[in-house]
Image (tube, helix red, strand yellow):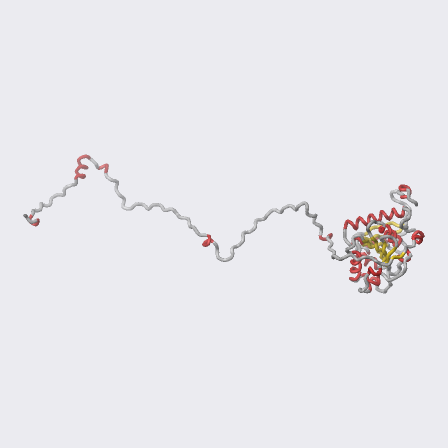
Amino acid sequence: MTEHKKIPVPPEGPKESSLLERASGAFGFDPFKAAPVPHRLPDAPLKHAKVRRTEEAAAPSGPTPEPAAEPQAEKPAPETLPTPVAPSQVVVERQVGAVALQGKRFPVDRELLREQGLIVPDGAVNALMEEFRIVKRRVLESAHAAGTARSRRILVCSPHPGEGKTFCASNLAIALAAERDSEVLLIDADFAKPSILSTFGLPKGPGFMDCLANDNVPPEDLVIGTDIPGLWVLPAGNQTNADSEYLASRRTAEVLDRLSMGAPNRILIFDSPPALAASPAAELAKHVGQAILVARADSTAQSALEDAAELLSGCPDVKLVLNAAHFSPSGRKFGTYYGYGE
């Protein structure tokens, strides 16, 4: 066996081509060559991924601000709600219990009333009674419209003495007392010249000024009852040298509130001194809801009425009554129309 070392190696010649190369040369396979491979392929475009954060990571540190509230259109108020009232018309009153009037009763001299030309309770209906029925209707309408204790306080005044303020106050009190389920307190506030007790024939005694001067005196203890159903009288009391100062004190409001608040059926009527002759009328006007300014026909001047009305401007409602008039602008006479006596 011949060693491989001794096998003769053929001499190196030109390198033979492969079978494919020879076939390509014989049959022309060059067009079917594989496309040349580029040195570097282009990079494929990458898709941009969206960043996702959990709610814990997205929430900022610290308190979370509340979203701003979107403005909402105002809803129309329900029809059941009351109509708003202007602040100037709003009245707030203290809730107090009604004070009963239980003074000793005295008979009223009916014949004395008739001699003075006043309304006689339980008497025949006449023109004077009908006239004051009209006046009291206006007073009651104003009191019911306001619905406050102050609106049920009526001041009767005149510019000068002798114009009929006591006459009108007394007749109005008698007419109002005739109302069903109502009571009237007639207060004599003419401290210099009181006349209510003598007008009704009642006995003298302490009254309005005494409870103003002494805080320990309840006003209801000084009220006098009458045999006219629903009519009570508070005398003027003892006169002092500081009547106006007492009326300007806080005690006046306390006394009047005690007499009127909590008693919707009670009406207070004040017979005050003439507005142009004494100052109490202007002070009392600040505590009442209605004022009746009495003018005497063919006697009271227009300038006097204007000055008196200015002094009573503390009262929100000032009415005018023409006294001792022998004519009617409309030509109406109650006796003719209704058969009442003259």
